[in-house]
Amino acid sequence: MSRLQETDLYPPVKAFLEGQGYAVKSEISNCDVVAVRGEEDPVIVELKTAFTLPLVLQGIRRQTVTDHVYLAFAIQTGRPAATVWRRHARDVLKLCRMLGLGLMTVRMAAEGPSSIEIHLDPAPYQPRKNKRRRGMLLQEFHRRVGDPNQGGATKQPVMTAYRQDALRCAAFLQRGGASRAVVVKTQTGVIRAPQILQKDHYGWFQRVARGTYALTPNGERALDTYADVVAMLE
Picture: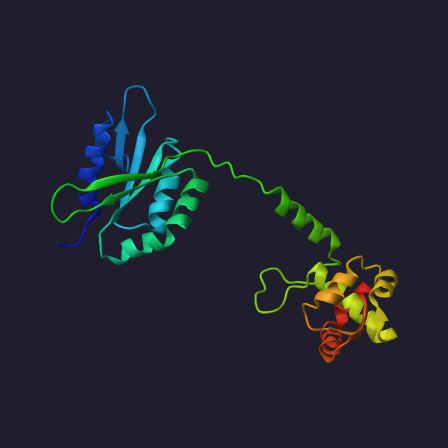
């Protein structure tokens, strides 16, 4: 099979739209495909041999003309582009949905007619808000003391409100020695101190008796590592 061209997608897309009752013409005002049906708003289809960023950008530009914009790309069995589509279809659909773009694929056949599949119609994006995640975000924001992280940093642990509370507990145990969890809670003001000590996510604490905890060598090192944060918390 010769190398696929964008023009190879036009005949099956044109035939598909004409089957829906549209009059179809190509290369109208830089649009790959324009379809008109009666007094309805025009439909624009942009063509590419694979799903690419230029295809997305073309679609966005066409949204200044009409709300009915589709991106169309080819799927050739056994070709790498087809594998990419199978692997990332969910993300591609989510991106198009967020941008209000429609999506269709053209399955190219070596022999016989090619087939069109509509995966998504253009529509305004209305994301469903996750109230639980919003609450968790605001809770973390208000619990965290100061702004100890650098936005965009990926190679160091994030200083969360939970880690700050754990440091409060560690600092108290360093000063006062092994203590009961309820005492740590009362003296530090960390409401979740018993859970922090019991779960010991960071390896900073060890239980030395029922309900009583002491600081581990890892906890000592953490207090040195985060000395600036500990000073801010006091």
